[in-house]
Structure formats: structure tokens, C-alpha cells
Image (cartoon, rainbow over all chains, first blue to last red):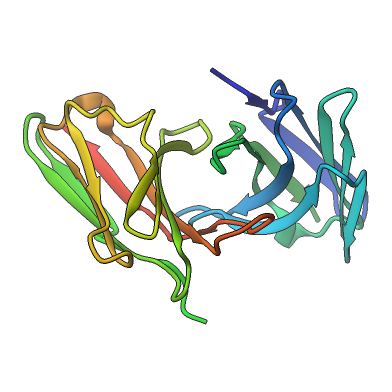
Length: 111
Length: 114
């Protein structure tokens, strides 16, 4: 039951360029969406979130876009830095207040 | 602010043995979650507590997994007996009660069942 999908297992970008990570969901009742960043041997760290009443939220180099009609959200990182290299998880909250996670996208930013 | 604490960090057991994990959430966080993360996959919710009550345990394999949060603070997750497919990282997370509160994760316990 994959309600949250990240179809790209990996992404490689050059330092200074934009990184775009994508996420699709199937449950139209999700009302809160988040992105988490995970380094090896650590737990996921909260990065940025967006409520379903918005279509964009910005925090420094990170911007999350939500397209409810397409059930799609994306995370933009600009400019990308080598320290951004990590696994990024998309998550969505359901009616039970449970967070459902995608499988993750491994981002590599090359110097 | 101290983060979510989990122990142990690593555990290796043989199949059919039992194991327990411990979690101390961030102070004041009413909601506590246990997630299972298998290599190459995203975290999968096992159980959610609101204070000391279970909100959702629909994905917890109750024939072998159990969890408790007796005083509404610390929590333990137990597996008995363990199977090979239980090898995973077990993540504990906590959040404030209410809408739009992100989860804060501990560093997890990596379980290997041989």
C-alpha cells in the first residue's frame, strides 16, 4: 500500500545548480506534507513542510511546491551544495495523524 | 532542546530470540511513533501513541510485536520471537499534539536477525 511514491531512487547534480526532488501521492485526504533529510547512521531530520491549503513554502535555499490536483509535490534546492548530499524522504499525514513516507531519493551534489 | 533518545544503537540476535528497544521522546511531546525502516525503503509506521494511549497499531504484527508507553513518556518496543525479515532500523519519533507538527526522529536501533 504505497500511498506516497518517490519514483527516482537517485539524483546527481552539480554544485551550484538546482536540485528537484519529486513525490507523488494517491490519498486525496492527506493534508500536510513534509520533506525529511537523512544522513547515514542518523534518523531523518525534518527539513520543510507545507499545508494542503498552500501551494508553495520557502525556507532559504529550500522550496516545496504542492500541486493538489496532480497529487504531486516537489522539493527545490537552489543553489545545491555538497553538504546537501543525503537521502530525501517525502512524507504525508493522513486522517489518523499518521505520517506515510516515500522510499526516498538519494541526492548526490558533485563539487 | 534534547532530541529523541533511543537505545541500543545496534543489536544482533538469532531468529526466535526476543529483543526490546527503548525510546525517550522530546520533553512535552505527547505523540510518539515507532517506525520500521527496511534497507532501501522508507519508514513504515508500526504504532502511534497519544500520551499513553494507542491511536493506531493497524500495521503492527501483533503476533510477535508489542509496544507500550505506560506513563505517557518513555516507550518500549518488543519483538518476540524475532524472524529474519525483522532485520531493519527501528526509528522512534515524537511530535507535539496538534496540526502541522513535524515528527522528530531518534537515530534508530539497527537490528540484525541471523
